[in-house]
Image (cartoon, rainbow, N blue to C red; front, side):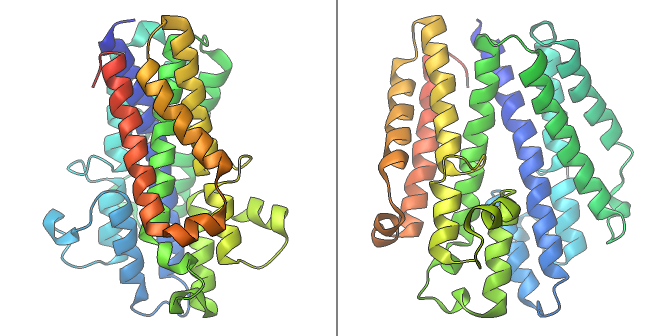
Length: 314
């Protein structure tokens, strides 16, 4: 497979995953801004959301006032923001068009239809009555894309590059969410206590589509160590760091079998997967949650860069 084709498939997977992640982050930011006791705290919540998507300095992108409407427009519609839903859907569609012959009709139509239909939504439509509909639509379309990939695409090298991009992005996103809100997971901090802390824990779980499954597994109130365990180490949770890294390893192992190459990136992925398998939350907290997540982000970036070098794409 040409490196250019591998790159298109890899980034198509990343951009579709990113579109869903941004929609989920927008939803939880919106929910927090409507909580009765939010006060001025919603600005900090939006700032954390922006940091998660790679915008630590809102003023640098013209967001001098962190109103809900302004941040939502930036996250959903701003074409200058490479991580906005609009930019992600367009980039995924562009990558898909470049490798049209490698896709099934169902995968291509899902991509193309999502890009076309998103144009019917306007930035002026952002208000409490319309926003949930838009965010539900994004989640539905990205789920349809994943279903079309799983159910109709030949599970060959192309499929594995798509999966690699998908789970590299998911691992990165989960670590960033935890890193921007890690203080609430530390039992000794002020943020961990009280009703505000409960909202923050729920925010973390909603950001990774895990608030219902957490209750199903633990049947307990939100507790810092359990939330951290669920989002970092739980192998059954589809957006946990462990689950994501396991699937990165599987994609690279499949590529290594098919191509006979990729030894360097597969070795890094296996190390990351084994580390998460053997890790315990007390050890992570002792090491430092922020430090651990920073290392996780570095490791994920190294796997992506090494895979690009192994398979000649960028």
